[in-house]
Image (cartoon, rainbow, N blue to C red; front, side, top):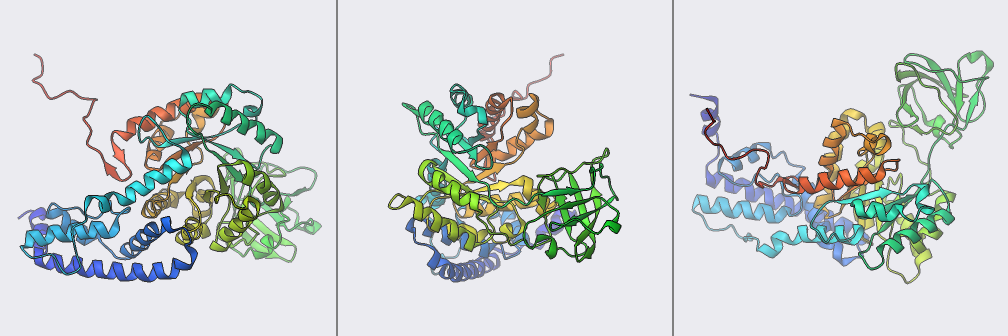
Length: 505
């Protein structure tokens, strides 16, 4: 007897399977109700309540190991619950109803077949939130394309129309660069290009706290390679007898929080190191990751501390000043390096103080750190409970904070969590980077761009070939729309092969 036959023999009978599903549904509903009650004080926006309830149900469902149950459901020709993110209880009810029919039993008490409106409700909410934040697309459901505007968009009035013609749906301004005069010109060109057409929303990202190298000590900084050692201080140079190159980071309390074994990354991941020894003046680092030719550190390059809780204020003095402009001119605000629900509440207070009686400004939470990933459900509830929300998967910083091996796994889980909350997700960082910067894509990044279709929006960064990048991405996303909707494969007719015919002799 084959292995497959043996597997079939251990499948539960429909009646047993029905009891298991009903027990699971009861547990999920109870856990979800408790979570929703805990979240309720955060939710003043009634439109988010059904989404919060579904998010609570999804988190409760995923606390259970469903692997064996999924196999059994598939054996009986039923949904394996693998695409239940947007409608958790409805999916359970539908499967329970089907198993009851197979078992020849009536529907269990309290269970009813979901009607079509309830079945589509979560998907409709997510679709409307996508339209609200990223604009409508009259040509179909396509994943939206967001473009980071370069400085020349302020002086070249033809750039924005060219980007729109190529397929851009919305625009991003990075407040870490340029100034209100340039931002105003950029927005003016977007509004002018939109006149008489459709709305093209503008996201303004406030910069957030960025930890950087503030000083280099010594006559020059040599190229550093794997196993080289150098010093990191909180401001002052190390003692002369340390005898190794040194740099300083003046962010309060950061260097003091480091312990032996902690990782430190420099320059967006170009150099990785581990703390080898702590001293009163700072730490000695040993390089673990670097390019073969080495890396020369420079003043102003960023640092990341994936193993260390860095508790800098979520909003800097620059952010607070920039919010005066953002609150009056942007269509949504990007919140960099948000980590806790208290961070979200702080931003909400600052925005409310600047907008007065105007409607709350939609927020994009940029998920960049290990702590933000851990707190994501609370972040979503705190933000979406009061205003429209999207989540940006900022994969560059995430890779440094989580490790490259975990990035693929976590970006998937963030997509699932956002779908459960009916919150649009933005696929960001290095999408088609080689194409945008150098004019030719790599094979790997074309696949990455196609994977982004499962998000509601894909973001391109600036570069000399940005218009070509938008056109390429727009085409890829529309093609993938035929084949994929979130996690569900769509069985559109295959075009690469004709129907099988006898081979010509």
